[in-house]
Image (cartoon, rainbow, N blue to C red; front, side):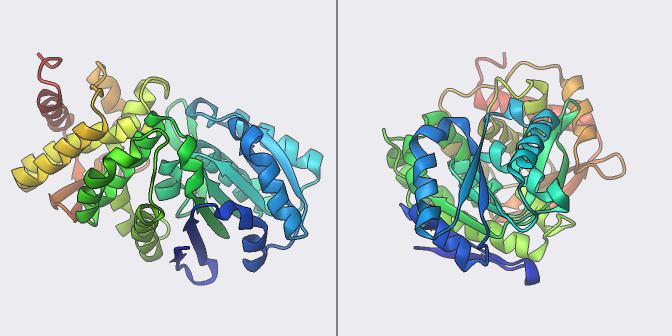
Length: 369
């Protein structure tokens, strides 16, 4: 069973990756120093298949597990959902030393993590991510938060988990759209840190797009190791950690502009990476061959994806509200070459619009006419 350490001095924790390891969840919590009764915040759709097994895992370790069911989906990643979870926790009389176990995809992890960071001024948190995107990305690093109408993740806190358990058996029941969303983040890691991951995705794409999908624990562990290394260097995104936002500046604006309903997070990040590639070509002379590798791989992962038709002025407004804006300038992660990211301030909306139009022309020539 691969285990990756996120090294943050007194806030360090382990990420366990494997198949079938959720059966050991109670024991793993105890080994992490979490011996009190726990409350699981679990996505409603996972309850029939997984809640009984989760409770059995805690019973086997001699610990009680209470449960709160919560709706999933980006439209529920808001302050009303947070208030509802606070209410349930007070009914259960959840105490400060008792952990919250977040079981679900990135939305549930972000909301439950924010609740853990703020309820009783902070209670222990354990992540059990059940989507590929959450396993390789959002469950690692301590970012929590919810959306406002003005933009994505504008309210939140850094709250590191005490433990993360990535069980790849959850991935076997995922629909193709969720596998693709997770693969967008894997491609991101290949672009910013380890280009050989791009070849790994291409070589194993058939298995990951099969029914049921088959995702190797080693692929998940490799991505976790990249993020853990970055987070260990820069926990609160003051510098190095910002490279993890490759594709996200445009992607987050795209999600907000479509009301978090018509474009998935992975699709938005994929399109955002294309725009960032074109900016990289214009600004940093990114080699055409590097650009081609990413375009071709994303086309295999997202064969039906198109750029939504949007008012670019609306996107520009959303760029200005992004958390990464500094002194009125939008901060973009661009590439000198694959594996060599740089942070670049972009102040001219026309430059971003031209990169977006160039990406759309290349990605979908017919639609862009």
